Length: 188
Image (cartoon, rainbow, N blue to C red; front, side, top):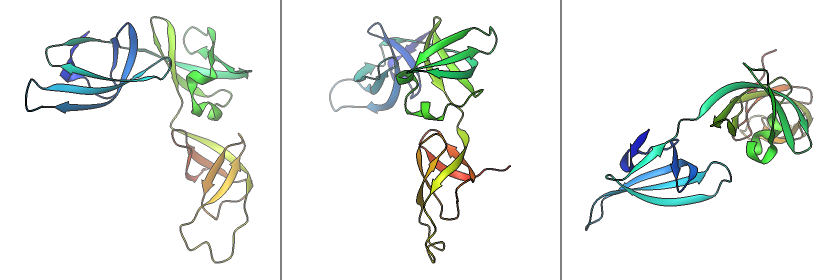
């Protein structure tokens, strides 16, 4: 699907210079001389390299629509993670660096979204929130509970998360996978 250069929006995936790029930031510039253009910050989907490009309204690029499928996480095998396709039940592996920092939140049986292009996996999207158990937390200092201070805690996957002072060892908490922040106490 063709897309004008000034119609590219953040999140769009385009094919440019024989590679797939996702638009990260866009800004429209009208210089004193010459025609207006769109300044687009692109990130390569496969290796994460960044590129700044200028596209004029008269230029067109190929917009790529990624295929999405629901998959189930099965297990880790070294630096690779094994998933099962939700419809075909086919098993496949994806390198940990393709998943990124959120790979620490993968749990057995977790439902994730696989994005692929022409049958080749591009990225994995985890759920926005996961429930984890606190296995280590600092003791509460008397009088500190009234302030909005947070204390470090270690959850069952080994990650260090900042939690409110009232959270103790054994408490199940909800954590945002995107930025590793505490959201709330889990409802049992």
